[in-house]
Amino acid sequence: MSTEYTSEEFEAIQAVVDRVTSWQDGAPEGTVLTELREKFDEAGIDLEDSDVTKLADAITDEHGAIDAATVLG
Image (cartoon, rainbow, N blue to C red; front, side):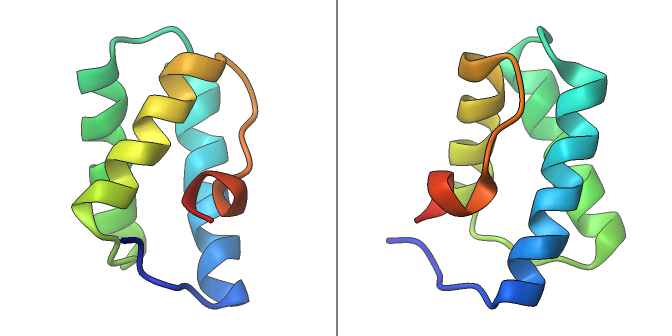
């Protein structure tokens, strides 16, 4: 079960997702997952491991812009 995030948290999460997506589009899932975790740590955003994995899967599967709120919703 995903943790509920505030709108401010989703805004920060989306910024990290957009950044990683633009850099890592087409990269292997492990690379995307590592980058997401690193960038969330740098930004001080604490996400459940399952949520980071969902976002990494979406980035890998979609190969384009994703909506973090939809993925985690």
